[in-house]
Length: 381
Image (cartoon, rainbow, N blue to C red; front, side):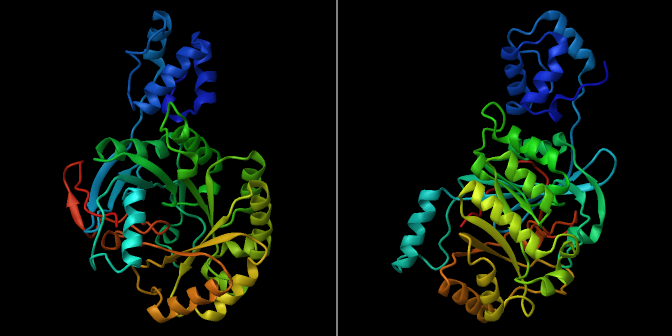
């Protein structure tokens, strides 16, 4: 038999691959847990694995891994990992510190009551990881550092999972969420992304709640419709970037292939199928897409949907695009709020290490170079 990489397989695929070795479903589940929950590179402790199967698998199995090139930490507790793929390209992933939800709610109430210290922060209780699905990206969004790298290749399932496994093994708190907002467009690597997400959410795998796994797309309409038909439970985040096609086109060239109107139709189908509030990501760029008029256009665009707008400050190392001013941000949010649309301004952490999700570029600059795996957790407010 050819070399067998169990790290690349979800539960169904692994059971099918093990069947020729005479491995039954019960032992197959134990092997799945050994590989994906324990992150092991051998099957020695697996109970019930027959001697003949064990010997055959020992010959056929391969255990590929990613090389950690470096880790860079920022003052707010974000840690960016730079990995090297076996064939040479580099990818990045980011460890994002988060507080305990109850502590966060209590702090919010204290702030509302004027009882919180001006710079009061919360200790880290868990992490979310921002992972890459491709090396480089073909979409060439004008504000995105990854897009400037061009398309290199999609990652295998095991390469996506290895980012999580390697970072989680070094973390001082548990990983409770994963966002596919790193390098690449996840829906241009649909099968491997969904396979990886299924392993991460499997009780014998990553055991991460499906609702805590988010997949962000710039608008690959056929894959959005496929995802809707397949009824996965992971959260989708749709990146708009602008409230109309004329403004969106120079920012996001995907507009040529799948115009905003067609994307919105696919989003409506998803919303109808899931009956959930839809999360729309909106990259906030000062002087470009953040006037009150833009907000009014956006409100009209989504008037028939239950949505939440995630405002994400642009992160452009070239300096061509800058975040909005407080005045722009206030006018934009006030206009959306007047239409009853919830707005969340996502905290842009790790700025000094270029850790902005969706704009990673495999850089080796900024922050503190960490020489040990277990980095101090200092952020998470």
